[in-house]
Image 1 (cartoon, rainbow over the protein chains, first blue to last red):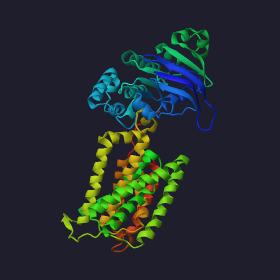
Image 2 (tube, each protein chain N blue to C red):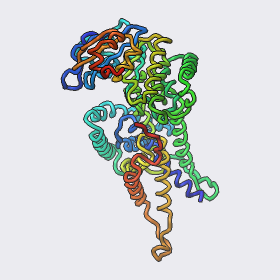
Image 3 (cartoon, rainbow over the protein chains, first blue to last red):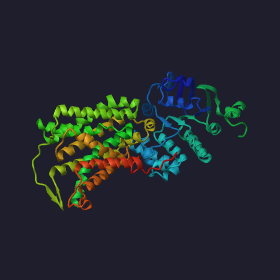
Image 4 (tube, chains in turn brown, orange):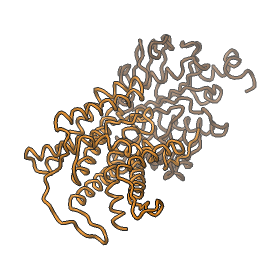
Length: 239
Length: 297
């Protein structure tokens, strides 16, 4: 479970980009953060992951305070899986090496079992497990990044724009994969997305940010049906 | 012909370990640490000094190599890491300044005269048409073993995979639970050890003077750039190429071209060849000869 309370954050000496944001992501739920470019979505995710240190506020994971814990310790000690938006694979390493690296702290037998399970779930990766990650398509890279994060069976999964730059077909496959993860493994999933309509369809709830604050929040089904939301973020009534 | 191959290999042994160190550090820290050539000089000179004060050769070498590795870590922690926060060019210029300080320190402590290991004199071994001395064989063995151990570590262990992951994508490595700061310290230690071993390998084959570090700078830089900075085993290939060209140019008889019987280029011209290859690489293959990775946006 992720609890964010009144978090303020920014870069260097610059102004606050997050102006006191609070949110909760419970286990087994997909929570999406939406909003226009520059509203602070990615900064919020980086704060939660530990790449950006909050100037004020608190972050808790599974009940423990983790506000100032660096990223690698969150991953190790709080079972956090993180899938970045770009540069999301180790390009010079093979598909198998990428996935195995995510589980290097596990017992060898568990790691190999989990590796086989993940390749069973993602056949497009199985057929390319000995190829370099640099040779994969954008969608395959996204799945590889997801598999790398999932091998250690995370209790919290952070996804930064998983559909960025993907074709509609691949985007659908990636969102299906995310919904599958929730069904099979039940982590708290917090996802930043631009493609609001598709993201809301697999989410349980969502927060819409505007200028670093939460402008709208609610159940995904309610937001999909909300006329103001449809006109502002979902491209009118075309869906 | 076999003598020619031996000469190429011996020259490559001078360059390989230092070039690997430079490339490995670049891959993680994103700046070419010029001070690495002085770590090589430190390794060689320190081992000779330790032997002079009574340590057995093997013990002197181990101590010199470990101490140099620690010096590399300390300098990195207190100087280069801080300079890197300003920028990579600042760190590079800083490493040049540190190199000059090393030269001055060598001049004050060991003086300008060349020194060498005190080793028993042995007859050269004859293999085909080549004559190889025992210290040359030991030097070659040191480089070969160091390369083998580094390759095993880099490609076959979890530590190596973490090092490669950190050098490929530091943010993602962090997000994979890798302590990237510790990885950098480890690679700096390894590069210092490799450079020091390179210096020891040179010292075993002959004399070492305080200029040895700066003499290595150009060919080592050229090897690392030809191999693709950040690609440690590319640097090995780069060192072999530089050595091959240097050996060819210094063993060709230019006499017939100049209407004389015998005209050889002085060995001092070898560094000019490194310089030419470096310029050519920067102009035509700035990312190195062996970069074939498919780049996707």
